[in-house]
Structures are given as C-alpha cells and as structure tokens.
Amino acid sequence: MKKIISITLISLLTGLTTISNGQISSLFSDSLQNIIETEAAANGYIGLSAAVIFPDGSIWQGVTGEASTGVVVDTSMNFIIGSITKNYLATLVLLLEEDGMFSIEDKIGLYLPTFQYVDENITIKQLLNHTSGLSDLEDSDAYNLAIFDDMTYQWSAEELVTNFQEPPNGPPGTPYNYSNSNYILLAALVEAVTGNALEDEFRSRIFEPLNLGNTWSGGFETPTTQMGGAWVDLDEDGTLDDVSSLPFTSFLSSDIGAGNILSKPSDMVQYVQTVYEGNLLNANTLEKMLQPAPGSEYPPIQVGYGLGTHLLDFGGHPFVGHDGQRLHQSMMYYNPLEQFGIAICINHSADLYPPFLNMGAFISLNLETVATDNLENSESSLIVSTFPNPFSSEIRFEIITQNRGDIYLEIFDQLGRKIRTIESRAEIHSSLVWDGRSDNGIESAAGIYYYHLINGQERKSGIIEKL
Image (tube, rainbow, N blue to C red; front, top):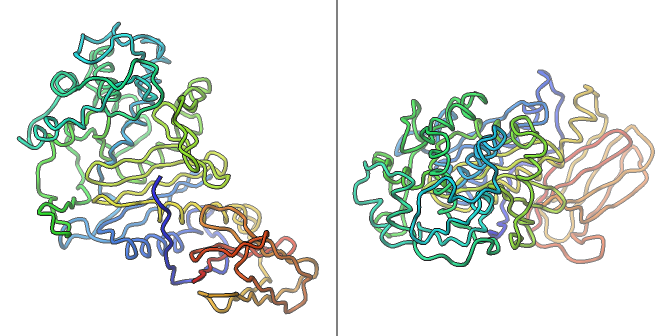
C-alpha cells in the first residue's frame, strides 16, 4: 500500500456545533472542505472532487482546483473511476447469480467461446477474486500500442482477449494475482449469458435502480455531464499537460468491465453504502463478496480481497470497496462498523491516501460526538485551547469547565489508533500537557494527530500537529 504522507493543517478544530437541519453532513462540511483544500495544495492535485455519506444518509460534497485550463471543478463533473469498475461488475455478476442465471462456481467454458491462453475450467468465482492464474492482457506491449492507435475505436471484450491475452501465470486456483483480464472476461460472460450489452445490464440493474444520475459506461455511453478534465505528462518534462479535449472511446472501451465506468463521488458513496449495508444483494451473497481469496493479504492494511472488494483495516477501522487508476485516480470505500463512506477522485494520477486517511480519521473520531452530544442539541460548557500548535516537544491543553469529575485526554494517530490517554481531576480551569510520547513511552513521529477531551458527558475534538 502507498506510504502515508504527513500534511500540515492550518486550522485547529475545537469542537462540532449543533445540527440545525438534522443532517450529520452539515456538521462536518467546513472541516472536510479544509482537509481537501489543504491536501490538494500539499500534494499538487490539479482538480479534486470528494463526497462522504453519513449514517443518516446525508451526503457532503466538496471540490477544489481546476478541471481543465481555466475551468474550475464542480460537483456535477464525472471522473474515470478505473478499477472501481470491478466492484460494480462483481455486484452485477452476483445479482445475475441471485436471478438464477448461473452459479459463480460454474466453469466459464459453459458460457464463453474458447480463447487462447484461457483455461475453460476457470470458474466465475476465480475471475471475481483474481485466482484464475491469468496474466494481465493490459501488460501486453501490443495492447498498449493498439488502444492509442485510433482513439475513437470501440473495443469489445472478446476482441481484447482474442488479440492481447498472453500465457497464464499459473493454473486455475492459483493464489491471488490481480489481473484486469479477469474482469474483461467477466464482461464478455455477462453479455453472453444475458444477450445484452454490458452497459445495458449496468444501467437496468444498478445505475437506474439506485438513481445514479451521473454514472456511465465509458466508451459505450455518452455522458450528459462534463468530465472533470484530464491531465498527463505527454512530453515527459515533469509538467502535467491538459488532454481534456482528446477523445477517450478507445482508452475507455479497452478496459471494459475492468476500468471504464465514469461517475461522480456523490453517486459513488450512494452506491457503496447501498451495497455494503445489504440493500442490493441478499445477506448470503454479501457474505460471499467479503470472503478473502487465498494469498490476498498485504499487511498491515489490506487484510484480503474478496469478490471485487478490497478489505482494508486502518487501526481497527475497517473499510471495504475499491480504488482505481485509469488516467484519473479514485478511491471508494465504506466503513461498515461506523456506517460512513468516502469517495475521492482527481483528474490525474497521484497518491490519494493522504486525504482519504485524514477524512476517515476525522469522521471516525467525531461521529460518536455527533451522536451523543450534537443530535441532542446539548449546550457545552467545555472550552479547550491548545498552545503551541504546531508543537515540537510538548503541547498544553487549557481547559475551562463547569463540571467537576475526571478529565480524559485521548490522542489518536492518522489511522485512528489511540496512542495516549492522560487523566486528571477537573477544576474550573485545568491544564494538561502531552509530551509527544505514547502510553508506552515511545516518542511519536512528526505529523498530524487528533484529540478527544472528555469531561463527563461533554467532549471536544480537534487536530494538532507535531513538528
């Protein structure tokens, strides 16, 4: 997994305000916008769009930067979500199984023609969880030349496998080995079994029932909304070039089923919550989707790969979903424990873990506060200030409260792991000091940390930075 990059946040969040409209998203709006703007500046993102869906179903949307030269990103724009497409196709395949069209334990030779280098004894499940042993046709030099030869050409799944599939890496049942060929073959299988184009099956079974109004099968459907731009370093001079005006039919259709869907983050979080809350697939099917394939663990973050689903764990905070890179970079994950989902898209290739981790950690650490304090419209008498922030050796928390009793200061890292608890008896004016060390005395690294300060039923949360 990608290295976690520390960032600098300018503002300190000293607590959440009372909800006035009953939507949790309104509480987090300013803080989440601050995070994406800060991350965009720190990581050189050109254009970014993000969305979060909360346990009450409310959705926050935020954007920053440029789509194309002189055009700002807005929340209506769609992005190439790349391999997140695999999650949608896995869901579609499982819906077809529920309808009795096949079993995922069936061998693909029952439904597909013979292809060179594709063993007909591979099962549908082995395509879904990348244990087919197939090599990745997108690693082929011939493929990477052909898809740019005529950018208006529309590829079919069978044509791609026929022309570009290369010898396998192993027999069916080989431990997990991620390959786009698996999902291009699944696209061919859906079309063969249903007699319909893949884009029509997506639309009738997922896009329309879930009211995903800005989600499209790229290369096969024409969106009615604008793409959020596209940037790539064409001349390899270290500067990204605006390629937003190029046709993308060949580029997208050549990744059919594996990376060609266009969507916007608010559609993506609505979809991911629906799937992983069990509101689209039945319970037994969802359980199968979350069963990790042999050899799919990549510690410390990826605990497995199910059926079109990455299973991640960030310090006890589970996330399920997928990420993708196909010119654009995207992430779409849902936390089933705390019941919120995050989707982030940028219009070029870059590491998206910094904003994802900081958004996820901030939401996780504050959802309990929202539920216990703000939704009850309670007035807080707890006042907290910090100095200095950022700090080098120690940071002081000055606390004013009308409540006697114990005060607890909890410090969390960027993965949401609690690293330090400090306890004191409350006075009207109290002071607590964190020396930058964990509970076991280890000096903490420079970076962003989160705090909860708890006094009876009252709580304040915020962000601090260690230099």
